[in-house]
Image (cartoon, rainbow, N blue to C red; front, side):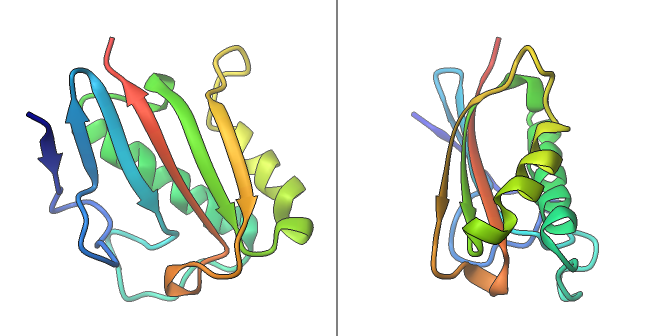
Length: 129
C-alpha cells in the first residue's frame, strides 16, 4: 500500500495533492511551483533562473523530509511556459543541481500556462537505495 506524504514545512499545495507518494522504494514527487514555503503568499521570484532555483530547492526540501536527496532522483519532467525563450537558461540552472555523472532521465515540454502564473514546474521520481 502506498504511503502518501504531505509535509507541514513543505510548499503549500496549489491543488489537492500530496507532496510525495512512496511505494516499494519508488518515490513520486508532485510537480513543484516556484513558491516560497516560508512565505507562500509572496510574489514569485522574477525570471526563469530564480524560479528554477526555487522549484529545485522545493524538490530538495521534500526529498530531505523523506531522508533522500537529489542524487536519488532517476527521472524529471520539466514544464516551461516560454520554452523558446527560457530553455537554455533553465538548463544552466537545472544542471547545477545534479552531479554531471548522475543526471536523471528528463523530459522537457513547453506548455501554455502553469498554476500561479509560474514560468516553470518540475516533478520527479526518486528511488530509495
